[in-house]
Image (cartoon, rainbow, N blue to C red; front, side, top):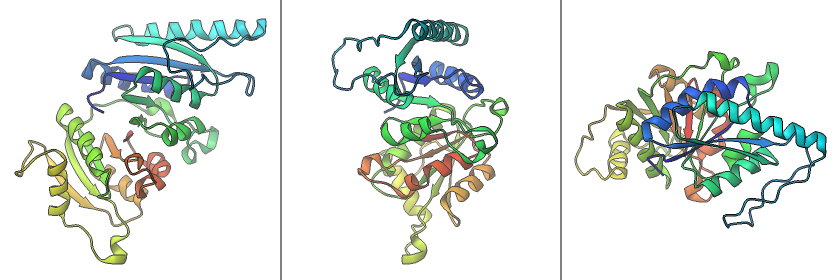
Length: 294
């Protein structure tokens, strides 16, 4: 899963997408990764189809026969995408793709075709309710795509979002079968960026069964995930347990730790929904910083 070599950056030319460009560039430079700048042309819903998932070869999907007016709009969109990528990613290895169809399905298709390691995309709400909503495309991607997704901070005004290097990371787990993947992702980024890391145990069921893991147990699980047999990984590590609802507790700890990134799981390695997954949209919505869900 890491390091990242292929980053997919879906864009709709919104302020939120433009505000995320610096973090995409930094991530690409940090890992010498190639960026695919993707746009889904879907101006007329139910008119265009998503790329076929049955095609596993190297050929491109068949072009949709648009009316002259729609084809002109598509050509204009493609030129806008080329200009956007050339302006924003001139010093980064990148490619540009415009595909026809539902944006979420286009992203899913591109992930498979590009062997994407990481999707970076903003959350997107609507008008005055932006603080309360995640965009439907983001929600579908989080649900259907298994590769890591890094979402930007869900701020009402995307122009207020500014990238700062990941210096403080909160890693929230509930000690299940996907914990190792989450620990490794957080530790890798902490080591890469020289960040301090807060291991946050999130499991509200401990109040029912009285079996809250000790800090030593959480740290032992972390060391095992990294293949560390003796204490000490060269990381600045702190440990916390959650005594609140999961989204609000993660938000509180992220603020307390002045976190630049929250790392959580999505339940894919379990083939079912983890406790964190059931709260994922709220975690992303409430987080004061970007969230990497793995």
